[in-house]
Amino acid sequence: MEYEKSFKTEVGTILEEYKYYLKKKAHKSEYIQEHLEFLRFFSTNYLIGNIGQTLLEIDEDEIFDFLGNWYIRKVLDFTKADIIPLLRIFKKFSSFLYNKKKISEEQYLSLKEAYNNPRYFVQKFEGYKNLNPDSENWSVNFESWLYDNGQKSEAVLKQNLNSILKSDEELIETKLKDISSNVFSIVKDFKTFAKYISNFKKGIKLTNNLFCLRREDLLELNSLMNNSEALDQNIFQKDTVLLHFFFIVSKELGFCNYTKKMRFKTTPLYKFFLNLPLKYQYWILLRGLWDVINWYRLNGFSDSGRPMWFFNERYIYSTFFSTIPQKGWMNYREFVHLYDAFAIQSLNINNSYASNRLYYGIFVEKILPLFAYFGLFKVKHNNNLNKLELSNEIKLKITPLGRRIFSKLRPLNNDEVFFPKIS
Image (cartoon, rainbow, N blue to C red):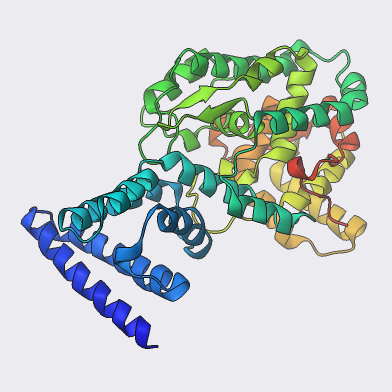
């Protein structure tokens, strides 16, 4: 189309000027190339190809929609760590446009509103990754994510918590009655984690791009845990099991949140949690793991790509776990073969693909250790729980508490906080 040719010619001219501008600033060729490639992609695929606009017409709305919506959905290898570098590119480019009098001061200030608000883009990214494609309300939830910043109000989050407690009150009172106090060590560790965060009145500083806890804080927190892990001095948050889970679940349950300056702090809703009886606190955290968070976000690898969706398999797992015989320790591979047999007999399917997920990835690396921390399984291994590998011998057995809970665990009624069972 004629307007597309005109727009592309304009883009080429502007980017040539920008290239010269960056060279005069003595930037390295790799830096210049990175900026030009991204801006060319933004111009061609989004501005011209999607909304029919030129580079000189952009304002905050285009940046918010592009990086907080379109780019998240369209670019497979986009990660949370890319957000700050891409905002810096926009910032540099808008300064160039303003200095060269190609845009007005009002337009320039509008653009600054976007790239000075990283929290918006981080929350949109995380909100999209948390969407449940198996939900009956998928379209409603997607539209909600699309048209707002993905943040639930404190009132909604508190309502979700009350919904969990009301729905599961009988289960909590019967299945968590007279259990060993050792089971609640994970609750004590979570409260230690939250207390450490709350000591930073303006919020604890996070790493610059991944927005995770810094190494020195991870090591200090780990030293305070009852369930401490074997952490290297060069640890990253995703290399941990317990602390990474606490960080994610505290955010998803509403007990912690990002500040505008991308620090991490506790919220008033955390006081509601503290006032609950200990076994109710335990149950909220367990439901947080089982129903609220997206398991792939516990993965030690990248946030990019599309999640390995198996929310709806969780209630198949729980039914299977409740059938495991309490005959002592079993080899992990025996455990997987039992699941295969269960899937074939009970579901009338060859479920080898699903059982492969028990062999590889986050189940053995993250979920099984967390089950052990919750007292649902016992695990024998040669390493610390945060370093489970199938190359080393792993033995496990379900605990009496695990059998009791998994035999009665049912999906929550609130679609916002559960992933439905496969029919």
